[in-house]
Image (tube, rainbow, N blue to C red; front, side, top):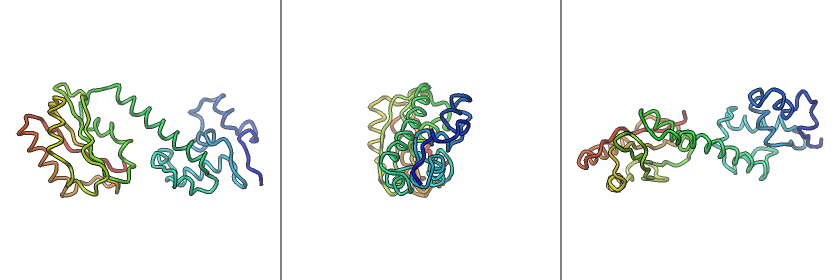
Length: 217
């Protein structure tokens, strides 16, 4: 069977036509992704192919934010071009989300700090530690990427964090890191580093607000 394009569907089933008539909100996740993919492959029409992609990432459209090139190309019918299209779609979604959050520069609650980093950190396969720098009015004035790719929090450079906070005149800081396992339960090492940073902040006249762990959800 030759690959089938969206244009070959009956008009009432074509995602393009449905979008023009009813708006993109009327399309299912698979239909939205089918519009991006444009065509299917031999033995698999484009909407079925879109469904296979979603299924590979848990059936949830947000799962494609966890996608990588190798995993995508491992899906039957997804080659380099379609894989790159999906990766770019996911990156656009992340940047739009991040820009919307950047428009409000104040962090009034710890949850807002967690939300700010959620999409960037929740799907990473290695541990990253960020420190958010805030002024007296809880406005973001800086960010320090304290650690990348470590297997635990013991490598976090507390002294460097304090130095960076003082450099940008931060009055408050929040530490944020991810758990690649998806389990946001703090480990003993997490607690130890948080206490070390809290103590260092007290000696430096900086308020340590909290340590946030990003899991999968």
